Length: 281
Image 1 (cartoon, rainbow, N blue to C red):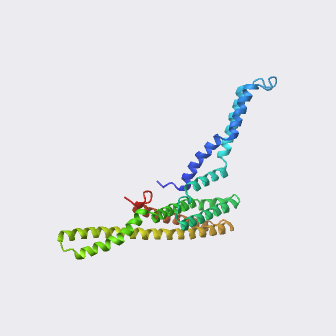
Image 2: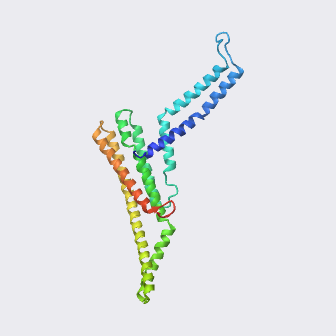
């Protein structure tokens, strides 16, 4: 079964949030309160013309009014899009990042995202707008993966355990080599060789982690540039007649970038658990 996208997950949560807001809106409280008061104090305003009217009628009208408010809220596409954006900004943002350069990259990505949304909003309803919307559906996954990648890079750069091990190994490995060169006892030499090999493997692992984080940082730069390219291409699509080939190519480019970012995030997760600030177990 295909993995649920970030946008699909956000839309589900947004619908629940919208439903809760729709039910507990002030208008609904006023409708219910008004219908209860009218049912109690004025059960039948026109007994001669409407003999069948009773307190239950006011209550029914109040419930119907609440239902209409809830239904209109749930069907409001702008309200749904706003809810998704709010959830996305709450979950995927620069909060907590200590690296200024990483924060700036993500802020720029957020700006592109806002511009892409605005470009879609400016389009008149029709086939072109629907095609552009389908093309950009994965932008949420794109930026979400950028945020996840940035968090891992930031955590690694500020990991005190890795920093301490890196510095300690710079001193301990030369010291072990010097002891090994002077040691004459076979048993002690064997232990020194084992310890030295373990420290060298640990150092090699840290070097590999350093290289992966460098590549991840470069991937963020590449993804940011690609996001800008997508925005400019989206504007070009929007100024022309419906071009299914161009839109499909753009959609494929976006999907490829999302997959590439996800692969980098997954590769880092295999070797570094940023939640616990240390090498993955």
